Image (cartoon, rainbow over all chains, first blue to last red; front, side, top):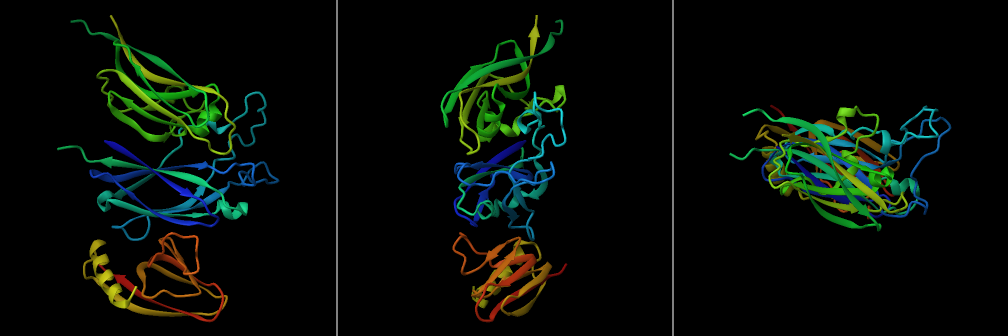
Length: 157
Length: 130
Length: 104
């Protein structure tokens, strides 16, 4: 059986470093997948960088921050990476667009969750988010990140 | 007894979102003829708004399939996907009383401008035809 | 963290990770000059801070430690993997770690 935990972390200040703990379900056996979604709360018009311009059609992705997740019963971290705003390059080099433009909301497939396999004996996932969005925007940016932790649950005896 | 023939049909339900940040809670009922539910899909006439702002909690027969504030974006499949792969698979659905409860929340995400929109909820069902 | 607390912590932490009593410890005392950045590779060991160093930023995938940082809500005493120790300005800074090397 699969279970899902959604944990929301709010970031308010430029360069903020926020540690948090995510309690797992009692009967969790493994952590099997990770996914995240970012929600901007500050108005985008007020100077928040939401896309980077480049000379080539390829658009660099906006890096919002750094995410690290660790289990207490494992050495080191089991996930460490950058949080990326959206895939800005949907429909890259598709010059047929115009009538029905390629967008991630119309053409994307199910966003893939990252597959991991971590023992869930630990009961708590510890992690932090280090803000970068505020740094590149040069101001405080308020946003929330929903972290999705997919877990495999023990079947009831 | 002769074995019943099952036919695959979509069941469609509709929710109206009229205000930014609105939370809509609705309960629908699947027809008695529905014997199996294989998957769920979301659609809208303004897919960009639903993609960025939509969150839904889904319950069938009091069993929770998507928890509170589950992003609709997670279960949206665009036209690049195969035709038979556009539903988010739901495993081991027990139809029971056939009640489908959805709590749809619209959350501003800073980059979209709100306009009223309709959310269509599709279920990939198998119905029995006598 | 005082050295006594660190010893107790290391003991329990190694049991938690399943190493039991199978570990060595080393004392590490780093001196970091102005503008210096030092990278320590601790992929097979753990660095436990035994004091709260001023004028330094310690960073690894486990977390951060910087006394002057007002933007963080927690500091990390246990570091693992690639550890970056950066001098953030002022006089020469010193920092002491206990390095824990587990073996199997």
